[in-house]
Image (cartoon, rainbow, N blue to C red; front, top):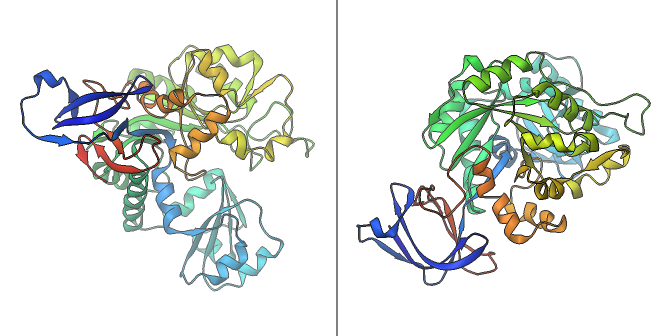
Length: 428
Ligand SMILES: [Zn+2]
C-alpha cells in the first residue's frame, strides 16, 4: 500500500510525505511496485501509541466487572444483579461493609491499586480462606476461580477499547491466575501487539518466544506493593504509623532469575515504588545492566546516577494521583517522581498508563507529562518509539524497516481518530 497526501509525524513534527507498506513494514517508496494507493487527503499520521506498562487482561476484567470508583461500595453491590460480584476500584472501605456478609452471593471487591481485596464470607468459603482482607499474592486465588471464556472476552474487549484510543502495542502483564495455555491462546489471537512480561519466579518453566504478532519477552517481578496500600517499601516509616515501612517482596531467587534472563536474552521487569525497594533492587541487580524498573516513584538522591544502567516504565500521572498519599512519606534525601530529570539525564524512560490502575487513554498520561515539564514532542516520543527502544523492537516510528503500526487523525490537534492500523492493516 502507498499512502499519499498525508502529514506524517517524523522527528517531532508533521511533514508531507508518502508512505509505503509491504508485509506490515514501512519500506522505501522507490522500491514499492504495487499500485494500491490510499489518498489521505491531508490527514495526520502518528505512530501507534505503545503503552510500556499496562495490564490488558486487567483492563478487560475491569470493563466486564463492577466499577467501584467514586461510588458507594455497599450500595453498588446491593444494586447489582450479578450472581457473583467481582468489583474493583474502591479506595477506602465504608464502615458498613460487613452488611455484605449477609448478601447471598460471593462478593470480591478489589482495591483500586489491585493489591488488596475485601471478600465476604461466601467468597471466603469458595476461596478456602478465612479472612476478609487479601493482600498481594493472596489475590491470585481470585483469578483461578474464573473460566477461560471470561478471560478471552475480557482480553478482546480491552484490545478493542485500546485500539479506539490509538494504542497499537502494550507491554502487558497478564499471567495472574490463568494457565500458561490460556495466556498463549490470548496472545496468539491478539489484535494489537502484546509484549508480555511473564509474571513468574520460575522462568525456566516457560517458552519465551513469539505467539502470533505478540511475544513473551521478559519476566515481571514485584519488589514492593503500592503507596495507596502503604505497602511500598520505604527507608522511613509511613508518618501516620510508628513502624510500617511497607514491605519488600522480591523473590528470594531473584539472582537466579536475573542470570537465567541474561543467558536467554530476556528482560527482568521489577515493580519498584518505594525508595528502599529501589536501593535494594539496584544492589541486587549489581552489574546485570539493561533490565527494567517499573514505577521508580521515590528515588534516593544517592541512587539517582545508578539509574543510568537500567530502563524505566514510568507514569507521569501518578505524580498528581498520589498527592494525598505522598503526605505520609518523608521526603528527606529523596527525589519524588523525578521523571523529567531522568529524561534530561539521558536515562531510558518510556511512558505508560499502568491501566487499569489509571485510565489507558494516552492523552491522560501525556497531559500529566506536559505539566511535569515534558514538551509535546517529547511526550509523543516517550509514548511511541521509546517503548520500542527499551525492548529493541522496531515499533513506534514512521520509518523504513519499522512495523507499520499507526494512527490517522482527522485534525492537526489530534483529537479525532479516523483509523488505526497494525501491521499495515486497518483495525479501526
Ligand atoms: Zn502494573
